[in-house]
Length: 503
Ligand code: SF4
Image (cartoon, rainbow, N blue to C red; front, top):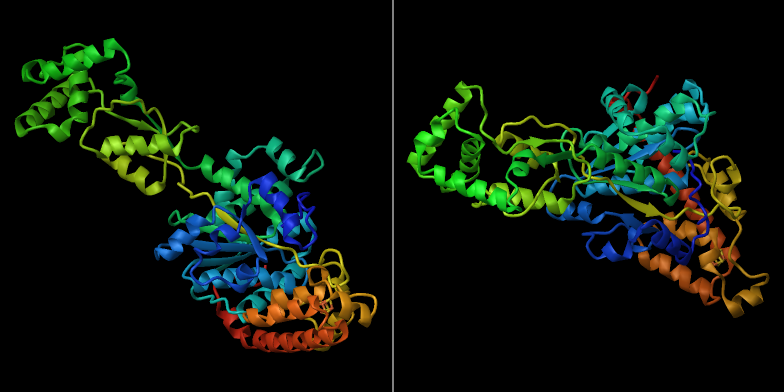
C-alpha cells in the first residue's frame, strides 16, 4: 500500500510510538496481551505494539467464533524480512482458527507504482512462495489477486458510492492530478479489507505498520456507513411523550374491548391506532383478542387502509448502539409498547434480518463489523534509517543468496561503542541496534530467553559487536538457506492453489 504521511516514527523505541496512542487513538497492545491465548513472539516482545479494536477479534478467538485476518501485499519488489513479519502475523491468526486471507494488490501496484503486468506476475509468485514456505495453508485460507476478484471489485464499486473526492484529498493528499485508477485502487483496498465479511459479518484484523492507519480508519468508516440503519416509523406515531398521545393510546386500548369498533374500516385514526397498539401489545393478547385483531386488520386492508404497524426503514446514519439495543429490547421483550423514545438504531446483519423478518420489511446494507488492526514497529534498515525495498543494502530479501545475507549482516551498523574497551565499560545500545532487531524480530524466533540474553549481554558489555554480528550473520545465512529450500518445496502447492498466478 502507499506510504502515507503518517510516518514520523521511524525509530524503534516504544516511547516514540506513544504519540500514536495519544494523537490517533491507537491503543497499546500491552493492554490486551494478557487476553491473547498463546501470543506470538512479536506480541510478547512488543514488536506488535498497538491495536485498534483488537479485543473483538480476541473475544471471537477465545469463544471459538468466526474471525478473519487479512493482509495485502503490493508486488513491487522482492519480499524481504520486513514482509516476513506480516506473513507471520497472518499465519499465526490462521493457526488460531481464523479465516486467513492474503491478497496481491496488483491493481494498486499497476495504478500507483506503474509496474508492468509481467513484473507484477513475477513478484506475485515470489511473495506467495514465501508465504506458503513460512506456513500459510492455502487449502484453509484464501489467496487472491485484486484484478481477478469480481466480488471485491463489485464491493469496491458499492463502497465508492459512499466515498467522495474530498475525503481522498484529506486522507491521501490526492489532488487534481491524481489519476482515476489510483483512486479506484483505494476503494479496491477498502473492499479488500471488508471482503472477508461478505459471506458473514465477523471480526477481522488487519496487521499493518502504523503508516497504514489511515487506510484502517477509512475502512472502519466505510464499514459503519454500510451497516444497517433504521428508524421505527410506528414508534414515531406512538410517541407517548405528550398528553395527546397518551390520551390517544388510552382510547386505543379502551377500544380493544369493542371488537366491532375495531373492525370498522371507516373508523378514524385512533381506531386504526388500536390495531397498531394491539400489534405492539400482542404478547399480552388472549385468543379472542388476537382473533379480533386479525379480523380488524383484514377489514382495514379490504378497505384500502393499513393499520399503523411498527415499520423499519433503513435510512438513519447517526444511530448509536445504545439506541439499537433499546429498540431490540423493546421489540423482543414482553412489553411491546415503548415507553421511551427510540427513533433510530444501528444493527448487525443477523439482528437486522431477524427484526426485518418479524415486522415484514425489506432490509439492506452489509452489516460489516468495523475492521480491527494491530500495528507492528518498522524494522530499522541495516544501514540505519528506514528499511526500504529500494535500497538493497538496507534490507535482506527473502530471495537473497544466503552468503549475501551473511555479508549484509556483517556490514550492518550497530548500537556498539567506538572501542571494545568502551563497550565493555558502558555496554552497547541494543535499542538502537539494527542487529539486535534482527535477533528480536527474526533470528531468535520463538526463543525469548535467547533474545533476552543477547539484549542483556549487550547492555552489560559482555557482548561485543564483532562476535554478535558473526552469530547473527550465521543465523541469517541458515535462515535464508532453509527458507529458500522450503520455497522450492511449496512450488507445486502454490501451482495447485486457487489463485491465478498470471495476469
Ligand atoms: Fe548490537 Fe550486538 Fe553490538 Fe549489541 S553487541 S550493539 S546487539 S551488534
